Image (cartoon, rainbow, N blue to C red; front, side, top):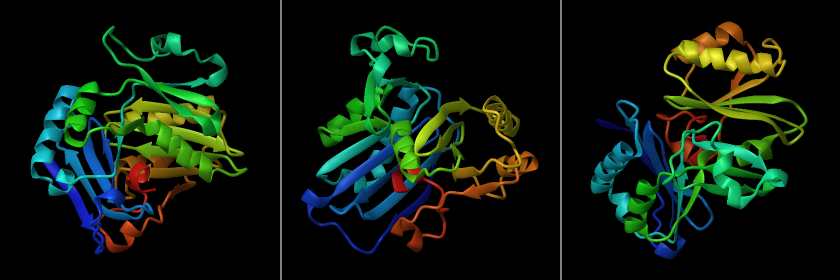
Length: 275
């Protein structure tokens, strides 16, 4: 089952295909997209959640095929299309250690790979690093059939760039939360101190990995500025257990105009697409 969480259009309509852009983000948990104009002003945003997290790219593809059959906005022509792969099949490699002909070796200690996997990288110029990852090739092929050529990236490449851009001289501990995974990003002085992505099933898993990371980084739970974004609300069990151990918590609210006309979605949600 696929549930449409929200569908929101701003009143202006982008008639000229040469000025219409599409951004798509998908994961094991769901699918979202937004359209924007030449000035990157969002005209439409939609988000779908899968009833249960799926466990393979093949099942994600089936879900996407269902959505594409009924979602008229995805049947338009676009001047450019950006696709965001959200998964835990990635690792960061500083440029000084990166060799493209050894790309598969960077994942072997953290990700189970097979010989037929396509392994690619995003060039993170803002931090002199490569983000090595496995995209879902079957979904790329499906999207190519629908749109032709497009650009694709790993979700953490976009997340890190946005958060490091917002960084200042104070230490910030960001948690970007999805239904079955969450990213922890720690920044200071416009530099990345720590990044990792964690799988979780229960609220106990969720708090364990956060407290473990704080302990390993020797960060005080009373003083560290923890900033939340993504799929979490104050009323949720995840927030309540987090607040039991950490008191200095805030949400990272986006300023995108789409939120001004849409009260159903929180300003800290969908940060990668809308932040």
